[in-house]
Image (cartoon, rainbow, N blue to C red; front, side, top):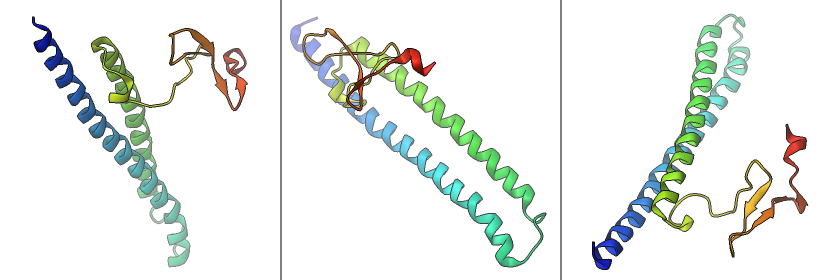
Length: 138
């Protein structure tokens, strides 16, 4: 393969990564809005019963269904996070810079270390100005 062909393939992948990020961001936002609006609905229903001066039995089955649906939305959000991580591994495999997609901030690993932006050396992760101690989180 020629350098020109490799460069075009790299640029195409970079462009596609940007489009994936746009779609992923919209999907994550949509799930977040669904969770928020469902929560507001569930929170409103008991007050609606009181305002309508009806028994607490009225609509309880519907509330149960809505609560179950929020659990499913939460599960979907967890799956999206897993998909996000999978896409990040793909990004790394193809050598696409982080600016092409994903979070812009350095995220500490679970081991309490973060890769420095320059030089690639490992540095202790810092949260709120203090070193992150993962052992205390367990």
